[in-house]
Image 1 (tube, rainbow, N blue to C red):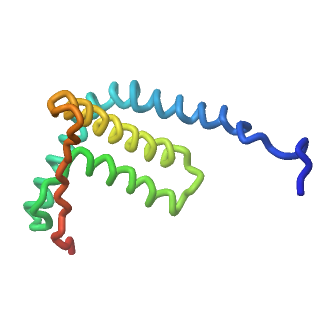
Image 2 (image 1 turned 90 degrees about the vertical axis):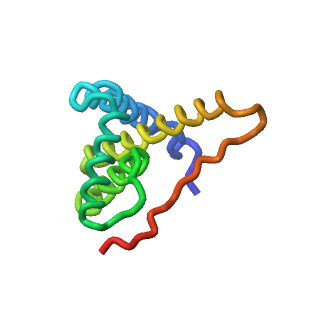
Amino acid sequence: MESPENMESPWSHSETRRTVLRRVEEMVCKNRQLSYGDAENNLQDIADFWNLWLKKRGKITNEITKYDVCQMMSLMKCARKINNITLQDNWDDSVGYEVIGAAFAQEENEQSKAFSKPGKQVKHEHKPNTQKIS
């Protein structure tokens, strides 16, 4: 067993994590905004294009949402990590898409609370796409 003085502090990597979070914050809150405009509008545009494409190809019947786009873009970055696990861009972008999706969810939950009765939880209905894509 290691002696206490040789053990690594659980906080030793905190500054590295803060650096990553600051970089992702800059990317999501500033750089992305300047390059692509409002995230909600841009990701809804992507969802609209994907819906049009997939419907024309006969691949889906349910709508893809901005939430789906966030998750699928994050999954795309995960797939890229298979071939290059240390490429920082894939990690940062994946976190960025998750943060944007989380912000959408938070805003929607806050709006739902404003319009719902106290003590009553609003359930958001999600209809999964059950059509097989081939």
